[in-house]
Length: 398
View (tube, rainbow, N blue to C red):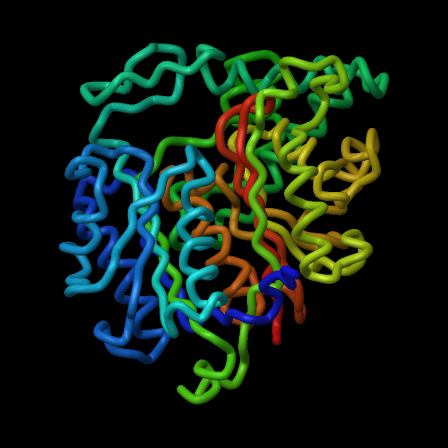
């Protein structure tokens, strides 16, 4: 009988590039930037890595959609390197491959790296049906802002939330993220933004204004994983282990059956239930200390607080306005600024979230360091609310 992966895998080292408009660097440079930090953190040699997973959605560097660009950039000589892609959940998918390889006993040390170089392609994330000079990006919703904005009217209808309260809550989410992002030296956007500016910003897709939408960035993040026994043998004293790593993919049920009301993301709830069971978490409200969630849009973060069980259904608006998820709140969310401040280089985002939780658990987060966290959750969402993929990791101190 399957027993899950709780505490079977430890993170040996992690790295993260500077995110932003990286005109100064190509994809291989970004990968090397995150990899070299992870390698130094792990305290091992390159040739000790036995297998690797490379997450990339499609930034134009691919050789037949293969793993060759990562193997070449990182000089991973002769080992298996697999390229994975699962829409915006790609980064966590890469981590899942590496973690499962170690947990299974197939390898002792594995690498997960996610990278994306979007700015050079002209990708803007808005309605045009093509991605700059690169390939076709057809999706049934027409545009990401329009797809996620649809959560708002359904949520309001289900819970009787006023338009004004919902707008104040999603604006608070954006304000909170920018407050946090100013303490993240690797973030794309590192400037606090006032509530007045956020509330009065141009509308993109009602109720989402300009500051309710994450930006387009370049970036890379990386993890090296092994068993706790090997990590300790290599001299690691403080260990961050993987308590759970779960993924849920939509079968199309949300749009084909009448039980989904459009106010939440079903795949997130499915993945969260399995992740909490695997990790032994029975009350996420009290047992989880911080979270990094897929705030591609501020409304997404709002419903995710309920989907992850951090707020009761219909109460996230009030918890947000009460400051529950602020830096000094009971359960800080996006303490590094999230996608809102880092942008969303698709292949890298899930691993960047894990990098922040890992840094916080080890007390390495500098000015944004929280007080003694022991359990953190990452949530990476691909696709759209009604046709998507949710990937969730639970990381904690051993």
